[in-house]
Length: 354
Image (cartoon, rainbow, N blue to C red; front, side, top):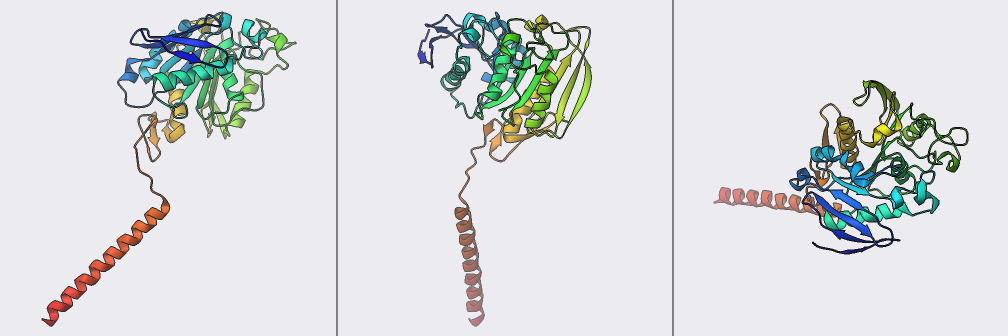
């Protein structure tokens, strides 16, 4: 069992190896915290750099329970899962929730530093070359979306929230893929927002200055991502006897999706994740657009020059020469051709005279 010491901003962690399918569990000496990660066999057999999905649990939730919802998807796509645990099972996402919010815990930097450690130490990649998608339920949804507004690093590739979203209309970074799932029947975290006029659980209303609905949030996202228009489709819910309306931005810089669910309670998100194909396509497009063009008809990615792999996460190691080298090469080739032609002419003239 191998151990190494990690020093983040406010916490110290020891990593212990687990099974062949996990990168480790992190224990904090400052607070008792767990951090689990799952490496699918399909990634181990792939030559492409890793895609990372960070799964963030709900208030009073657990990392392995949240991560378990995505293991089948991880195997299908070869995605590495990282699942942190918040202090007293809570996250400081401003308006939500619990101990972490009340004590202003710096969860944003904790998660960021831990992701960086796992990627550099266990996947042997740099953070800048790694597509990172965040997903979370309830308090985890609030926390996931915080990476849209308070970090502007290029490695933040996308966010998928379930039953929880940030109440902000400014400072969102354009070009980031966004998807939200929320139920109009949710009474714990209301579809139309949480504030002094709309009551929600966990004292969210008391810590929110504005009631921002999921619809208003989606309008903000389509504007930030420069979408030309929006199309909506009605689907049968795979979880309950109801429907969901999914709206997709058209002509956007990055995938922009809102799914409005009917007949769905807040707690249903806790263990259910029956949207594998939808999320798989969303992640595929989000990752592809970093260095390629996504073809919806075939669900394939066409890579830019210098990139390779199913989603263009690898490189072809093409050597790019400076322009003046290229010009010099053309001149040299021209000179060589001229010399060859003149030499041939002189040979013919010599043969004619003799």
